[in-house]
Image (cartoon, rainbow, N blue to C red; front, side, top):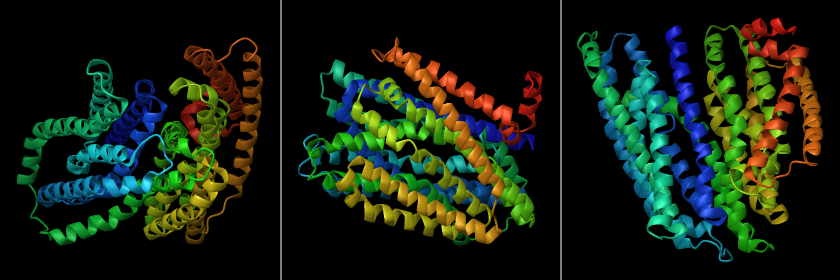
Amino acid sequence: MSTLIKGTAILTLGLFLSKVLGIIYVIPFYDMVGEENIGLYQYAYIPYNLMLSLAISGAPIAFSKFVAKYNSLGDYETGRRLLKSGLMTMMVTGFVSFLLLYFFAGPLAELTIDENEKIHSVQDVKEVIQWVSFALIVVPFMSLFRGFFQGYNFMMPTAVSQLIEQIVRIVFLLAGAYAVLNIFGGSEKTAVEVAVLSAFVGSLGGVLVLFYYWKKKKGEYNELRANSVESYDVKLGDMYKEIIIYAIPVVFLGIANPLFQFVDMLTFNRAMGDSENAAASGIYLSVLNFTAHKLVMIPVMLATGFSMALIPLITRYYTKNEFQQVNRTLDQTFQILLFLTLPAVVGMTMLSDELYHIFYEISDIGSEILAHYLPVAILFAMFPVTASILQGINKQKWIILNLLVGLLLKLALNIPLIRLFETDGAIAATVIGYVVAIGMNLAVIKVTMNYQSNMVLRRLFLIVLMSAVMAAAVWLTASGLDLFLGMDSKFHSIARILIIGAVGGAVYGYLGLRTGIAQKLLGERLTKYTKKFGF
């Protein structure tokens, strides 16, 4: 058990640091290329992320499960056979994905850019998509190696390679953009093209880390292979069938958010074609799909890590028919999710002006879109959690169906709602799609497990009430600061966030401890410390 906890902690820490770096680098990059050109960057990354998810999502998890299964039987030969075959398969998959994205970059760009768009041309968008597509050659190959190590419960290569990949990518991105603009006198468009190539360079850094660990552990793995029990001689076709069955739901989990963004990318500019802001639709889209989206994902990252740690318990309890334990775990999962996400969303929404200023610049448009978009973070956190629960109770096919229904609603409603409400329309279509998908997930959970919990509803009411009190404290603090501390510089905005955030956090923390909900949700260790302070 200690090995499992250690491995999970290492993997979680690596992922967390990687995500944090993925948010922070935007600050200097935005300063270099500006508001208009950051939109060109997101035009490249949305189709890339979608294609990448299709190419590799589920592969590391499914592969690690398969390797672990046969390793536990003492058959190390089968896992090595799959590694050899899988590496060739993923190299082919990666190269095919690269060709598809590279050669379909033109049609994608034509679908994306409206003739009234004055900021970027079809050629601009086509070129950045083609530059980013090269990373697809390397990343699938890398993902399979990570899965192999995880199958031996060796999480360090995955965590370190993800972190190094991100560091190399960001260093190349910032250094490359700086060199283009300040040394070679190039344009912001060229700087963005170099920046998107960083995905390829970063993946090479990740591959080198994995090769280091492979060289380090190869002797040990070869010894295990030599002492392996007689191979079960599983046919490669049966191996891939088992992996695909397990991986498909994970693929849909991975592509859910990129798919919703992809719908916006394809429809937003054209839907805005007849509006007063048609000429600046690219800026509105870049705020929605990149600059604001980066900040919206912060509370999601904060909450899902805690909640997802509870999901493996559901699988274990369900397999043993311990349905009462399953229901208790569901109660705890939903409560922790709401307890952490809701106050973070409320606080960030009220500080949207300061947040947008710190990361980017003072922008009425940016702050407004961010404030309206932030509440959707609750749905972004809820969907993967409810979908993971469906996996735990062996209802994977519903993940696919429910997501497709939500996505079709997004697709059907996006253009008419954008024409009526511009970016708010796109946000509303996303909300409707996610609410329906999550609602269907919860319906399946309720029917399958006969799950209903008045306690969760009572706790939700309490969390909402606590968040409202916190919001009042935040508003009063912000109003007081307005008298002598404005947003004249980023330093002032940082100071405002620290002061207001400290007050809001203290109020919410006090209420959580005084009501006892924090101790009940976050465990005995917290209770041990809070008793010393009279809670």
